[in-house]
Image (tube, rainbow, N blue to C red; front, side):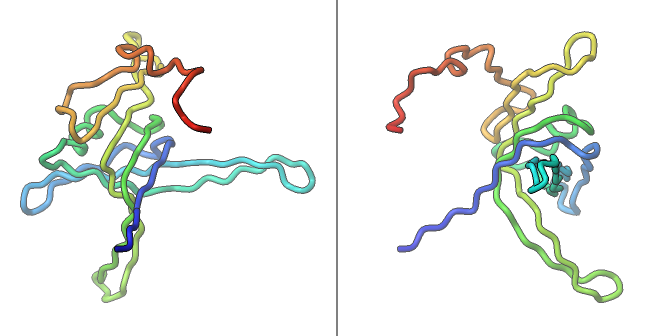
Length: 156
């Protein structure tokens, strides 16, 4: 039997506030736009940068309320980690033209930008996964050994 994998991991910044809507069946879905950038030096030694924009869709489902979480805790400029799968869709617009889109369907979200008491941005490491209860957050501060790691059991 042949195996396959469709997995996407992104770490980037939100380009706009999340857009949240409800479907006709009452399901809630959020859409965010994440920017990722890469830099390199060209042949002349000049620093170059390219930014890619990714459309990410987050649904509320039995496993977790990602749409509600992103609506409540995320805003333009926030840094997030998203894990999911890539999907390609097509549809007919009002003029009968076929439209295409590429999206990331999120299964996990980690909020990398937090808010301190004075409102200033700080790294918080809040994790929100599908198995988590909405509103409950884990922090790396609770597991300091997770960030240590000169020694590990990896064979390479």
